[in-house]
Image 1 (cartoon, rainbow over the protein chains, first blue to last red):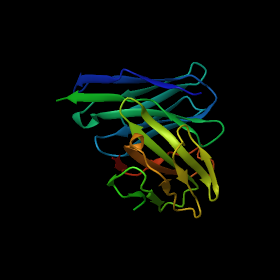
Image 2: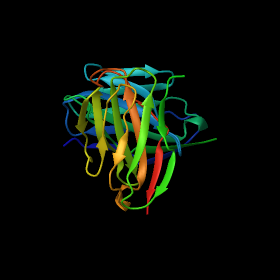
Image 3: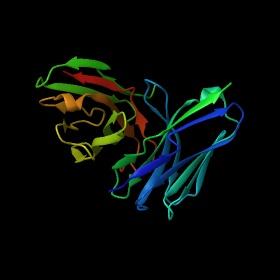
Image 4: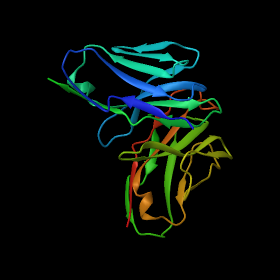
Length: 112
Length: 115
């Protein structure tokens, strides 16, 4: 059974810092990995999706990498801002298509 | 506006009273899925549907039913709700027929309390 772990569970940084969030998964037989953002009381917003054949994806200040063989992904946030404060979740989709497993998330606080 | 719409957003009900949470998407997505989110347990998949009339179990399907009679709708049915089904529920959809290649879009959630 796939297990997804996110470290750290919580992170507090001053505004302007670059930071890295980590996601690891136990079964490397995945089709893709997706990073989401969740604000309190809200649904999930997709940030980046990496296909299993890709190594990284970039969107603005966000960069996500994938090392499928080692079962790891990182989300890099450059020049963090208070508006980046949220919970960040990673999810892997299985090769059998359709089945998704989520990590517990990293709660990020960016202090002005 | 492209969106996934869940109703109701909030519901308080009692044990054993059948209820349905509706989910509708206007993006012509083939793939739809239901999740529940609980403190300390994260987001867990209940059921998913690859296309009309095709559904499959996720990790926590017990106590739930789904149906996919048309592409846009994917209702979640609790035939006999129990307090352990108190949770925050999310519906999601994706453009790919396999759900593999495209990002999932989420609804705003349904907060369900069963007394």
